[in-house]
Image 1 (tube, rainbow, N blue to C red):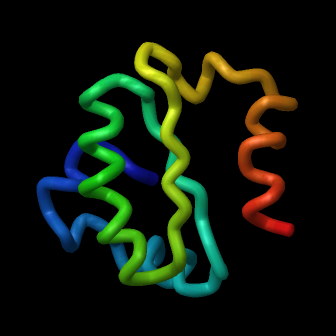
Image 2 (tube, rainbow, N blue to C red):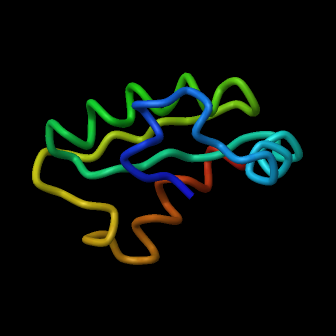
Image 3 (cartoon, rainbow, N blue to C red):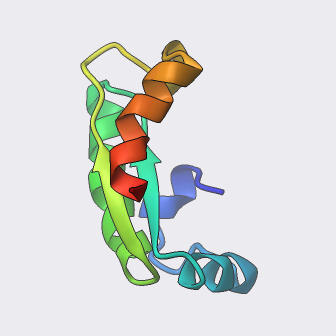
Length: 82
């Protein structure tokens, strides 16, 4: 749902995406742990916060979300949804 345009245009979300986000209590934003990923997350989070509460999970530098196992991902986000 999120791409490069997410932080260059504050109205990048299409109406359907806005409706879906508005129906959720919270979402998790997890991007790459490098400088670009952290910078993008800092710009994307305020846009998502217009529709729902957004938890930004920061990864260590050089680590990408797809580097994590399913168990590691669940351990990171489960407390947020309890």
